[in-house]
Length: 210
Image (spheres, rainbow, N blue to C red):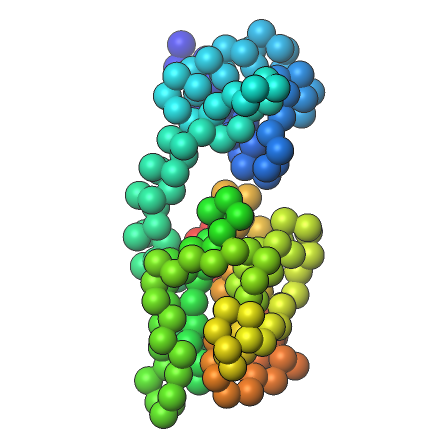
């Protein structure tokens, strides 16, 4: 019984992970093919997950993540913030710009951790809890790059705040997390110098969280 329960849990987690990478949802048939499971096995998983609020079905019968996942995500955010602070602090001090960790929630980016440099005369006041569309600003565009399978850093200017420049890189290699590490400043940021540092910080954070 323990082995069977463990296998069922593993299958359920694989199903949730599959749905997390697909905004348009999947049909039960597509899920069965992707996970190499029978359709009856998939329907049993979906029944349980839907009852607990972790998946939902739309009018066309496609399966999406349910809002129950957001409850778990909110519980994880404080732990994620604490894990990111050392990396962000080093980055902010090295670059002399406000460093931040942004995670994706649907089509928006949410700043879950922000660290300001201690030695600069002026820096951007970027609040934890700030939200913005993923297609505006370096942090969100880096997440979109992650979804598209691209690595490296993204540089933008004036998209979220007039005069502010941003450089961000996706946090790689964590299937359960869509996020980016970035810096933002009013002073010029040389992408060739700052970009690799931001990408290194994102990779360091991925190793720390992995």
